[in-house]
Length: 183
Image (cartoon, rainbow, N blue to C red; front, side):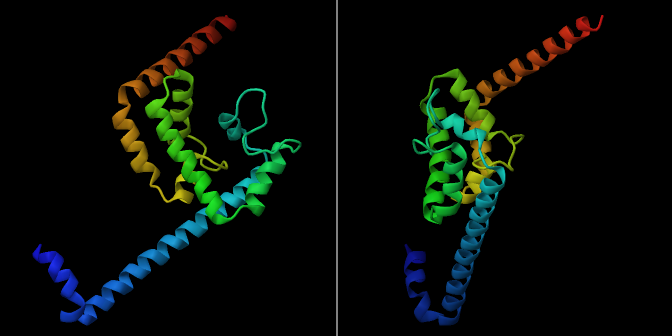
């Protein structure tokens, strides 16, 4: 209680310290905005460079156009529209929504295939130079991807280890079968 009262009195008792504190807070906000602007710029560049993003297929239903592509347009046109006409706020909301949706999907979804795709999307080995990768979405939305991975790793450790073991078994089986193919 005393510290709260002391903080309220800070401007009166030490105005120079208060001004320095405000300047520090403004600088932190400016730095955050700079990082956000750079992240959105990089995402726009990735979208324009990459063109059609295969990752959008993860967010559409089989046989339908990707979610972001209006009927009658190609996926390339929909992606380029995001990069050229969407505002920074809309792109941020999209990236925030993708990360939030992935975390909710892990929490709520019982489909093994969907959960595995979400773990793969969040994996550090995933391609960060692809539009709407986990890394780029976190950068634009202002999240620290390592913190999210650490949380997911702790919360779903056993399930992730099962997937890794299954992948290792598939690799070993493929290597074993290749050995017979050359014999």
